[in-house]
Image 1 (cartoon, rainbow, N blue to C red):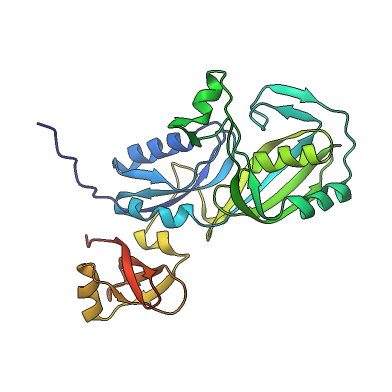
Image 2: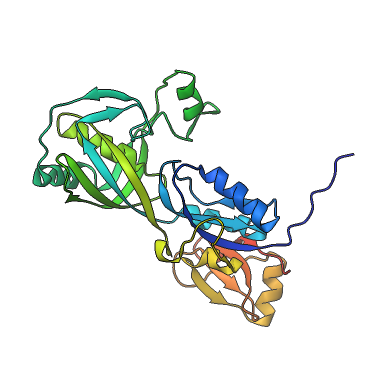
Length: 290
């Protein structure tokens, strides 16, 4: 007879400043040990060499990770022109070199024309994207390259700044979920008639979770569960509506497009609702009381 899983007793959100050289899954394992809690997950993978904001949910907050993953992201990193790698970043093997003399003005003009707004990207082979049930990085390790269909992404801003090194520019990017900064760097290199790769990537924001509040895996604070929905519109429930929400009732929709974070009178998160049709809203997640 299978053992029943022990119910989670620790709940909350941690804003981690992920160190270089560990995977996002490694960070999850660190917090499992630290909080002695199995129910832990993260909201948006960072490459092993990348650093910065990784939002980790513990206990019942894991049900709310979708509202973290779908938010906008902000990054800074260095684009090195003239050298291509198989992973599109500095961790990979060099696959090509090019004689390039990149002008900041010319590069920014190509960015503004081709790499900002609603665009399509081909995900890199060294990535967690699944094709026919297999993760691309697993295929890449086996020496297999497959066709990857382009995916729509949104880049809100992409700005280059000079550095002290020739053909190396600092890039600041704000984008939607699912955007690969490595791919932006490689595509820009190709647009300039050569190639490029990315190094020293740092994520500075995930939605309203900012690098200034992040700390290392051993030092990060465990914030209340309610912080997971800080980007959503807030609705404060009456006592009667609380009982309806506890039973998963469909309710009249509130103003705006939703989703809405519904709070009990004691200040705890009761549920997240989304619009159905033109006038109603239904529960996406109902959060039980402790």
